[in-house]
Image (cartoon, rainbow over all chains, first blue to last red):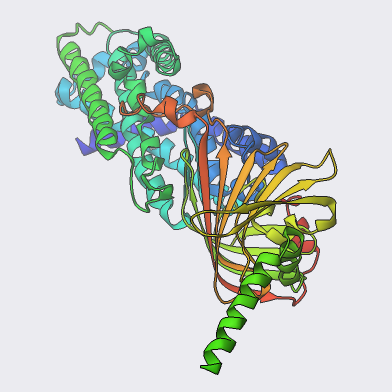
Length: 291
Length: 236
């Protein structure tokens, strides 16, 4: 099994297109950081627009590494899942397209083993991409902008978190984001077991993410009842670690406003991942492999 | 017996003297204390209680220079400062006492503090009306209400201690009306944990904000460079 995993990882990381995701992420993050470094006042103005009638805050203090990382992650909401789908959606269908799937299935490893190894390889790629995002978005932002208290502008609330209370939240948020991205990977992976070309699972996953994200963010009451069932709603759960409790307006260090809801979102995402993987296994076991 | 008579006579004299103080004299008495201060640097803690803000207690440094320059810096974080906070300094309000009409509005029932209203003579002045509740005996402003043209109304409550001789309080409670706060969901991409919705609308409504500053130390009249007040922002 380990040998199989090594081979699958070798295949993933040997392909030049694997690195497209890393290059794209690097370009987006660096461009955002340069733009915010050069002229972040405008963006801070927009962030503070809900309260600039009553308060003043120096933009240079608001725009620190922690806040910049939060802004970047907010803007990468759709991009990273698309890049994950690019690889995960190719795992089975890519082999079928190249005509190597039948050869793979004829090896001593069972179909379930083969599928699990491929899924594990896709998961490792997803985690590697996330670590890269974390290093660039958080690490480079801290180097460029330094650290200070973190500002979280919300729809109806404005949270400020103490400098010493931020880092663990990012670690928790990245751990949560990995669960969300694995859900996306498992969806793309599942779709790739149904077809013999890579375009359908990749485009299909991207379409699902875009439509679900619109439904999650759209403020039409008609869709309120659907929202809790969309995995994209729960993918935003990483932000829950930055929503703090307060007592008479004072932030409580180490607190999370609604931890049970965040954990529930994590469980829902895990459930979806297992469901997609289960469907993939169920289908792949019965699949008539012709190519 | 003689001593008692002298003491009673003195008390009557003091009472008559206090009653005789006109509103103008009272303001001059307050101003005389404040005029001893050309500048100060104060350390303290600032606590905010505003419906839509959750923020840690701030360790602040307050810089003041005559006539009305004031800066509040958060030593370990973001200096989120209420607009109009210059009014936390009574000296700034009274910096040009000649430009106000001073009206005696009697005494407050509960505290017996003298109520003095200040009406700016300049029609275009940002301050529309200031009302001071003055402890006539100490010559200290205990409470002040200021209505401005652009930034709403402010209320100040002050408690004095070590620096009362300079008219500087140990504790200031600054109350003001906050305006609506709301950002579009399309900008914030909020995580909906399914628990809010009921209270959200209330959070956006105009409410009273409260900022409490407790000073731990003042450094008075040691000189403050003008550059302090121009760092990163204009006067607040």
